[in-house]
Image (tube, rainbow, N blue to C red; front, side):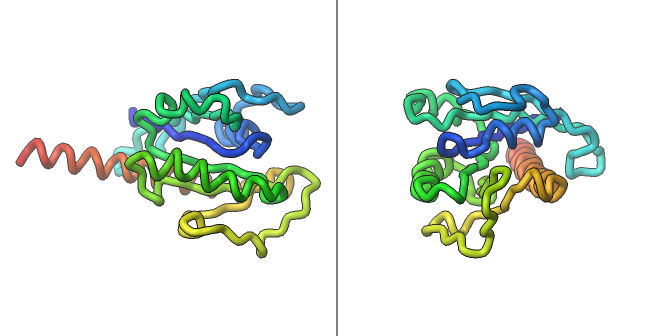
Length: 186
């Protein structure tokens, strides 16, 4: 079974745990806000998800990382062997737009990850004013795939975007494996 490790990072109170629970179909911790301490790992299995003809199942490890920078000393250990990074922020909080640059720098640029292995999620909380047009992101964030998530209004669109992203991660893992196998053969 193919296994992919994906980190969910971003500022405090951005909605990382809510999205991790939603995507993994977990009901853990639904309700009031409880800050994640360090990291919370959710395993999520998707049968027949592999991009190849075998239709093998995939297991995703969603690492729901605390947005509290007091855990910064743990970040290198969290990043080890990760295949992708999802940066989640609340677009209604101006401080988040500045902070996501730091998350991108630490979790994407300082690892050997491609921009295609990163997904930026503007998570709109219930009752927030959803302004999807006027979100201006600084370079290099403006090169990343950005999705808007609103679990009240369009949960299935959000799920579909996450599945597209996960599929792209699986394809990258498969390509990497094939290259590795070819280098062993030749």
